[in-house]
Length: 146
Image (cartoon, rainbow, N blue to C red):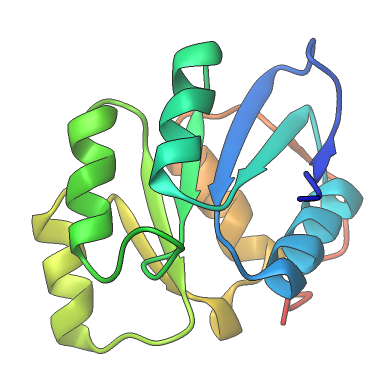
């Protein structure tokens, strides 16, 4: 049985879709969001197929996407998500990536590119602001997720 990680409630102001099949990262990322930001509701899906269903079922304000998931690998993952949802800000968060991969992600429609090892609360807050999401930060600056 698959475990779905969700926090917040359906009345939260901002809805975030995290597409990642790395359970450890999903758990850590969710915990950091829950402990450091208010007004966020997050849903996790492990594949493009499941993410597409979630997007049809609800409105999301922001998508965090791993490049290598159950049913897609590399920058093609970004292309597929842009085909499904061309307008929602798309932030790629991945374990590995060179400047070439980063350029490919941007060319495919990714708005931001972050290595998982470099994600901090401050960077997340900056991304939320850049995407026009009015979230409130609970003060714990500089904490690294992984």
